[in-house]
Length: 436
Image 1: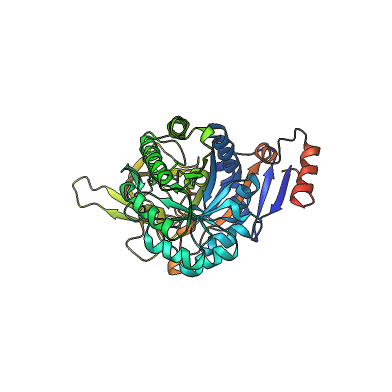
Image 2: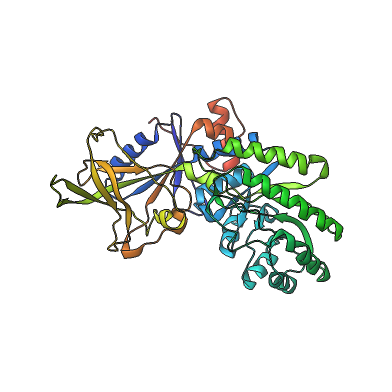
């Protein structure tokens, strides 16, 4: 049976399927149904639900506040809101989007250390009180436009290996934190906690240990100044999928042992985090069409040809992650492609810019114009930063979730009838299903 359900603040819907096919089969189905060569995403919302339960199981003391900047797709936000997560917002627009889902302001952290004055005023108007700072000028701004805000000082953690280093832009050095806190006290501002960020796409679990140790020292300094910190925000940097250098299990083990030692439950400190790619990366798969190809003869004695392939998404669109997120992408092929023979090839996006290149040189099987390829783990920092340069459209997103994950999300009902009843009551829809 298949059920379609509208996504709030969107013209799209997602499908609840009793038998969740492989993503490759779903892509083949959509290629046939859409009848065009347009690139598109398959969003497996069940993966988002799975990640959430994994988080709650492995880090029960840490509340996730999803980083909206990573992927502000309305379906992801709607599902996470329904699952009870908080949200890390960096602007007025992100706060507005989250509030429109019915999320209470207390479930939002305004985690931008350098904010526009008008955005601070908006946060004040909407009672979004928890926000970060890392400099004196930001304190003056908050004092003028939101003096009752609950402030969180952002410190610069020890250096770590990360895909995107954020320390070059944000965070006060721990040894200077006391002076900044003293200034906040003089100004009569309410500092309630501390945050840090080890870097987006952190590549070493040990980085969290170093940062938590540094946070403990600043917590103690704050206490001496008369502050009673209630919040520890351990930021983001969590992997979206397991890699040889780092996996989520190692990260959670490191975090759990260190917060239990330095911030035991008895101390009453609320611990939150700002995962982005952890939830979004593995949920999205991109399918693209080979719209053109060229064969370039080699000048060498072997006289081998080099194949140049052009697909209908590139670095100005979803693959902006190559430039801005330093993503290591991998191309996959459908079963009708002969993988035994590969040739030196390059892969290009659809725009007229020579910068629009996915791979300058790689080994690829022989492809024809009209063939399809796909890319997994494309949910983080792809859609959110893509443009329509050269008039190239953004890919359509098709949403699916298996009924097992949907049942878990609805409270684990164990029969289809109960499931449908719960669906109609909690989501205010009438179910009209049909067999696939």
